[in-house]
Each structure stands twice: as C-alpha cells, then as structure tokens.
Image (cartoon, rainbow, N blue to C red):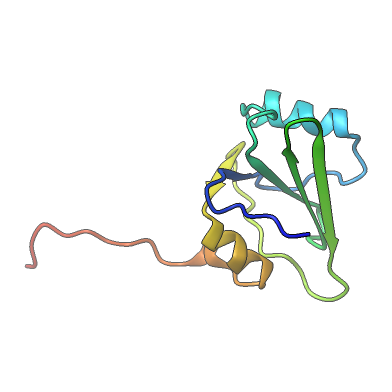
Length: 115
C-alpha cells in the first residue's frame, strides 16, 4: 500500500516523545500541546529520545493510521528546539527518511545591496 502525502500538511514534534504512549495520549499531544487538529488529515511525526523510533499519525476519514519505523543502526535527524510543532514539506520528509539532516542547512540570506 502506498500513500500520497504530496498535498498534505506535515507537522513534527521537536524533541522527544515517549513511543509507549497510547493513541489517546498522542491525540492529546497533537491537540493540546502542538495546537493542531488531529482530525484534519495532516500527518504528525514523533521521535523517541534515542532517535531510533519514528512514529507517524494521521486521520483517514474513519480512523487513525499509526505507522512506526525503528532503525536497527543509526539515528533519525531530529530537531531539539523549543517549538511545540514544526511544519515541514514532503521533500524534507523524504530527506529525513533518508537520514539527511536538513535541520542544519544554512538559511537563505537576502541582501538589499552589496557593500
């Protein structure tokens, strides 16, 4: 089964999340901490403290999908910021799943003139 998230909003929860929490607790984190609507169809991503477990949660018309991947070797690149939720693009998700740490990329600079 393949999913197309091309036109889907994707949010990740920076920092660590306990992967043993229940579906109800994850919904609480999405709605009360991340301040997002868990029933919106958006994808929500979580990572554990060791950065080996990645969990994706999204609502699909009549129930929640919960997908999890556990790395056997290495760690997920994951931000550890004070933000409650960070929206990312599908291209960034693809990089993240390939292990590319795009969170450390240089930000684009804009200049008005060159001195």
